[in-house]
Length: 302
Image (tube, rainbow, N blue to C red):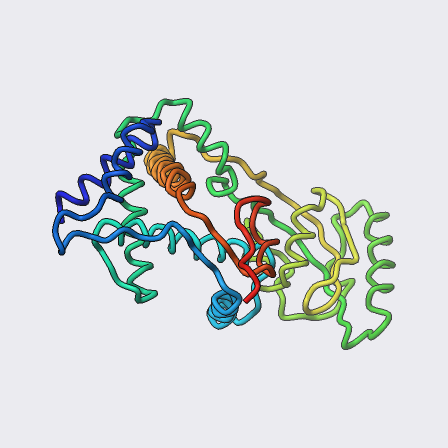
């Protein structure tokens, strides 16, 4: 078995770097008639996805996420299902045979691991790391934080007048050269002042829409009325720290690991593309819109 896995890795490594001749020779050898009764039999190069399979895939998604998949999510699920089927065929062609769906997924994962392992071991350059960090700026950003003061206007107490009352108070406060009177609103258990808080902390007390809006406000002046999950508010930002990407020197180990992981996945995708071209895929006509034009054929009518 170890010899067989080594052979898989070597062959797929050649495929990734463009040694098509070696890959073709290997595939010819793999399709040759077995020399003894225990050798693996050839597998079909035809892959089919029926309407029943697609329905089962959609139901599995719905059960897992408690909602139906969007078109893009279902398209990705179909692509993953097709990839598993093709890689399981490749594993079966090497003598690992089992028709159970879970076993096929495990075989596909083994093939994926073998393909990803085929990438040559090299160290990233500084430019590689900078490009990786730039591509993942949001993941390595220092979260924006603000300090602010808020005045609350209760809908329960003021009813339909809450927003108008808040707007009138805002006009008075903007015309007042003082910092503003915090007794202009209604009593509340909410804090009048929050210091050095991020979006998540604000959302926990006022709701996500309020948090997103407050982070966009200018500093130093009363703004509003602004709705929250509990009422209406006037807000004055007193301090702000802008979002910034962490320095490469501070996250080097994480970026190196991310670069290597992306490189392995790219090698696996490239090797899969080579394998995928060996297979003719036919799907239920209703599924054609989930695949690239010309990538699959419609199943013939029964």
